[in-house]
Length: 569
Picture: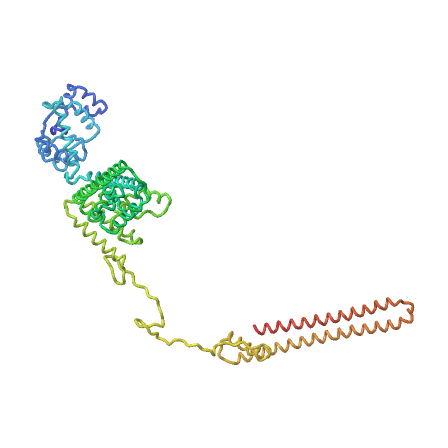
């Protein structure tokens, strides 16, 4: 059984002298405490030395990817015929078995054996000292770490991350310094703040003018392109409400203006550097979203390679993580865009189309980033083509018409108002305009005659019954007349009953009077007061009769009114 061991100087093959000791894994490390005991377990069979650093680097990179190099394959074919090979990497063992047909072994005993070999490596390999092995391993590790970048020095995206971070810091500092200049010089010339809005122009004017009294004799045409602003400045300087300041104060203000102008110049220089770096490292991403947005996406993702591993949905909301998790926590709608919102394509879109354009732009941006990170080409053809497609899609969304389409997106048909009386494509009506018919009006007449009542009843029956025959209408009129006759007979019978009742009351009164006349001779001693009482009783009875008659007449009037109301209805 042979053991393959990789060193910075080359590949070593050790032969296991006592394979029985491999069964005791727990006690195997004791065999490598000293070099003499280690030589009893293994011995060096062959050693394949690297010719130079590049050879060592190529072999090491292939070993990391679990692939045997060309020199290693030749070395194993020469020394491993009919032997079992113990390896530290199971994937490397599978690759060797497939290509070289050599049985490979990888288990815990082999790993413990590798640990012992590493401990006594300088003693087991003759001619390899510790003083030589250290520099070899250090140089190989440095070369390997450089190779792992997989980019040329021109394609290192770390410079972009640092440049965009510095650019954002410069913007903040520049804004702070410019506001300080405005506030400081505003005590001397407050009107200048409203006249000149640009911070850089303001700093240049303050540096050139100094005291506001000098504004009349100076020419600001090199700084201010508009002559009207220059005349306003000179007029305001004459009538300014600011306080007077000393020359020492003005010199300090001018030094601050120098700092603002220096920062502005450095920012311009840094932006040009960032633009050139972005066009070199990510040309397609730059063509799609611009230099600043692309650099911020790379900085937020960590690197261009990490950003290439992200899907389009992640790139779309990159930079809006806080809003995303807040929306998921509160169960509200998630954000539609993050850093990509500042791209020019989304800025051109209207508010209702920003979500669609951001989704499409994120999908195209993901493809462009992958091509820039993993592709061999250095042109921006993919980014330019994707941008043209997105611009046409945006135009279709903004100006969608009937029959127009772009790709798979079809325009919705135009909906017209339906008018049944209007011809297609003409302004004339298919049917004539309706005229007013005065004969269809209904005039309400007085209700005193019975004919008007009968006529209203006929109209009602005509409205209720839509049959064309006139016989049902005549029958309805006759039935109404019979009902009225019956009601009249009932009224007469009631009146006749009430009349005998009144006559009976009169007869009773007469009998009372005759009895009183007969009783007068017998009751001669009755006082005149009793007669007066009787007379009062008579008058009360007469009053009751009158009240009864008035009540009966009132009831009759009410019944008549009810009948008239029912007939009208």
